[in-house]
Image 1 (cartoon, rainbow, N blue to C red):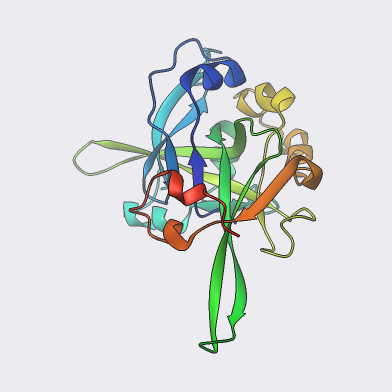
Image 2: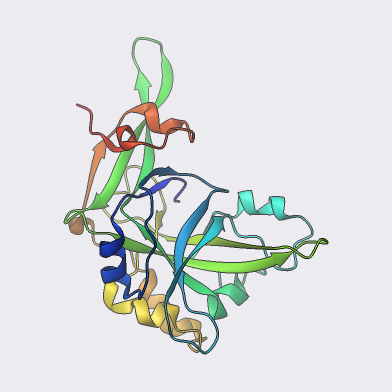
Length: 229
């Protein structure tokens, strides 16, 4: 799964990676957590222009009675999304790219001194340290007051060799040359999208342990990704 991630890059790199015409200055994010508002890239309507817009993490289906369900829908299994009521329409018509510079997983291990189980956080990023994109889907929910809430979820797939010892899922990472296909709202044949769900190559990623400072969502600074020995 993907429950925390980072977006610590400069606007010029974002613009270049995603072919964006305009990118406002963004503050570095070192500990993005569910229910927070985060930039995603999407294409709306017949306009092919890519936009960077803030949506809330945790998908709220347009038909939901209560937006609180979003906290339970931060991820969607890519193998099942086409048939799940919450995800089947967004998968076909409302896809987005979720820019990231890395994500976290926790590895369970024994604590010999306390005889308790502890979780050690690890940070995963591209080996070349480039910004990349998770495969995302979005939806728009409107409350009784008429105010809309736009939300997104991140698709997951089976883990690659690097992540397998940490978790049985990993986020779907879209290759740069497939951004156009993923964002194209006219592509509604899920079979054309399935090859994008293959795990990202383990050889192109690195992982290292970081401080438990990242465990608290309130901590959003570079200490979250500092390697420890």
